[in-house]
Length: 214
View 1 (spheres, rainbow, N blue to C red):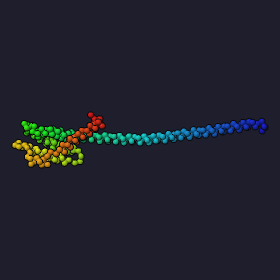
View 2: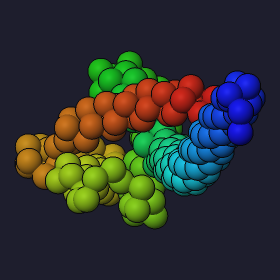
View 3: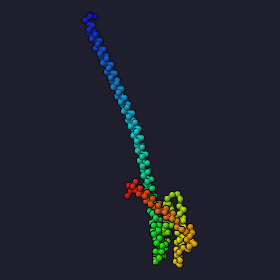
């Protein structure tokens, strides 16, 4: 080989070196790209898995919330119906009878209705009997776990009053009976019915507004 051939060899070596470097760079870059794509795909899979997991949890939470709301709503409706029944069938009617009796009794007791004395007595008797009937037949609607003591006292006093006032010959209660504690009308009974009825009315209004029931 002559000296003049050396430049060709050098050039070839240089070309080969460049090609090798280029190939190595290309392969390295491709490797990076491949790794990047694989990383992205892996990250995407993880993100989708997390999304799926959270979506499932969110669906479960929504389901639980829906059940809780429906349960709460049913409880609310149940209370509304029960309070309505209490007011319509127990407290409300007794409230109305007591209000009516209170006015009539004061007029009668003050001897303002002497001309219709017997008629007033019959009205008071019938209303007392109506209240007693409600106490007996609608006892399950009494608020609380037990019957107030003044319920019994009301029944006793009105029974005594009705029995004596039913006598056409002398519709008056003897003094020795009138002074008995058992014969006295229990004001606690009247106060209780008034207060409980008004509280129930307020509670019903609250429930109607809460559940948007007219």
